[in-house]
Amino acid sequence: MGLVTLTGLVLSSSDVGEFDKRLVILTKEQGRVTAFAKGARRPNNPMVAACSPFCFGVFEAFEGRNSYHLSKADISNYFRELVLDYDKVCLGSYFLEVADYLSVEGNDERARLALLYQSLKALESGRFSHTLLRDIYELRTWVIDGEYPNVFSCTCCGKKEDLFAFSLKRHGMLCKTCSNLEPGVEISTSTLYAMQFIVSSPIEKLYTFVLNGETEEELTRILSSYRLNYRAHKYKSEEFL
Ligand SMILES: [Zn+2]
Image (cartoon, rainbow, N blue to C red):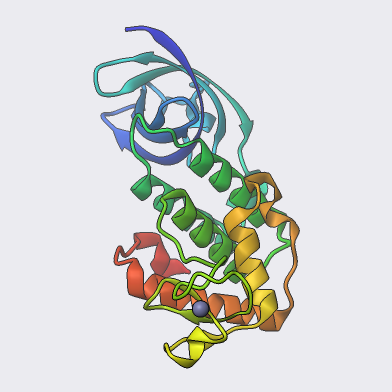
């Protein structure tokens, strides 16, 4: 068993045995991993605080055959403000569950980890509506997984200009001409720009824009119907949103 250093965020934590904890951590180096923290439920154990969901930091661990055994944790962000607010915890838990469900052990999950971290920071800041946060997180998650609506050209003729309506059936935009032939929902240019920004901006810049209420509503309408049509998985934490 070799000692490794993992940088990551705790997605979930459960009790095992009398004093131990089992964690699922989304890491920069190894994708999603399972790690055991021996004695982490004993009072005064230095690992106690590090073994909760939302903890982000550097973990030292021994690598076993199917899991890791934590020896040390240096937490740099506990998301303390977030975990004290019920509504934020609900949405944050949903973000964690989505990341848990879609990430894979051994995969390069750096983009997902960065998205999760930035989304939790934005959620903690209180500067965004929860609806917009969810829209941004979900759309960018679809981008990471490579299956997302085409918002840069007409899905019918390929034209990049005059994008006019959104077609659920075609997974993306239609130009003015094609929207006369194909069913689609007309959307405003600001909603289109918002989607283009969410799809293509660097993850660190994702949470730097503002939308007016009308645009946010339209964006939510489009993305919710897209989710209902194409994402079958029901998340447990969704019930609390
Ligand atoms: Zn067209």
